[in-house]
Image 1 (cartoon, one colour):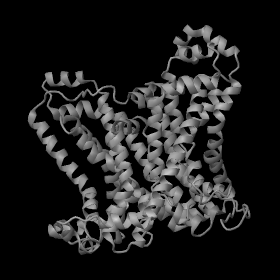
Image 2 (cartoon, rainbow over the protein chains, first blue to last red; image 1 turned 90 degrees about the vertical axis):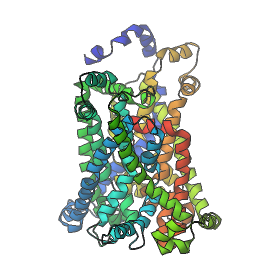
Image 3 (tube, each protein chain N blue to C red; image 1 turned 30 degrees about the vertical axis):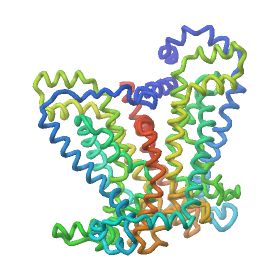
Image 4 (cartoon, rainbow over the protein chains, first blue to last red; image 1 turned 45 degrees about the horizontal axis):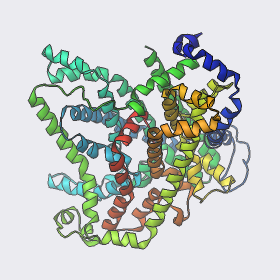
Length: 310
Length: 304
């Protein structure tokens, strides 16, 4: 029923449609889908299912097979382990440190860049280029900036009369250091999304507002901010999902340390699997993280859909 | 319901790859109090400057000697005789060439397989009529929500059971099923007139001929967009090659760079030079394909 109401133009080509329907496309269609389908099943769906299965077994990486059945044992273990909860907390901490600045700063940068007539290429170069660089380069650069005592940051702190920090070696500051590097690295992504969103705002709105005497600040406050609402929702959700999957920067900059003060969910999972060889337990933790991420992703899809239909 | 899905993806074409920046017009660029724009320019300029400091610092450090670099920020800033010694050391040691090779082979290999397979699947979903089309589309749609990084442990086991660990394939295969690529292609194909296919079919071309010699040649922009984004994603992936490659000769750039911090010790200039060398190919790629990269990223929300 909805099918018909949604695609009236298709009726115009009914005859063509009918001939192509009579000619069975099924065989070529499945052949066209097969190569992608094989990889999709083997490397996305298969591992997902396998992860769920293994999470109920005492599987080890050094022994073949699934190992003994563990029931909910792996889950019980993870949910009662303090380092699991501390890894979850650090992941959340990282999310809280990075998402608000990433959203607010990228919005400000995009709105300002849109107003400044010249030098667009320069702002894109400054803000966007770090985003396409490998996390490994980013981390080497920031570790060096934070080098205790002789690095650029501690020397700058001494210069303005502050006590220099050993950022990455200090359990209470290490996550802040990782967050700062991450904001620097990924802001270009949001910046570009906001610039694209700004293109969709009709210029007549600003013209009308300025005729009515609205100041630039009021135009931003009452036109730009509300009309970029959809972009902001998208940006926030993508940022939260990306933050929950954080691994690279932590592995490279602190390896979870000092102690376990910056250990995050994926770090705990890979340590459990590849250092402790306990694939079953690692899979249980993976499943828990997986569920959190998928719930947010599904919420995004639903939100997206209701948004478009409205 | 499924039709609605169909439609919403099509609407997304509005700010998708093909139409991310319709023209270089700028809606907010209108006459407004000049002072505001001047202040905006200054604020933005200050932030842009701050944003350039880390890159500038890495480059500056890579151009001094290791001895100067170990003296600290002040000495690096004051140094006036740049040297390429660190670059010479790294490029002569040969290790970095292995890393470049591994990154290049895995990135290019994934690009080829992803472009061919994803475009074929998208063509079937966009043009061919068959039972179960909607279902297949919804199943693939669901895949977009699966966080691949979280699957690192089962993917490792899978590759292990196929004896693929420590081969380039172990980095390529898991990254081929990029659902987003199917979407980008489908969106583009949906926008091509159906008459193209019908004319080709009436002329006696089979499905494959129609796809390969009529549709694909028209799809160059979208092929370029998918290729570049796939290339960057694979080149920058750390977690997968980190665990599936342990042979130092096969390491990709990110995995190789991850060993640098530990093994180069106090050779700060060398460390920063290796960070610059690891980033260089992507900076070049960005300079060559600026618009496409920016539009592709903005249009798909592609990330991590």
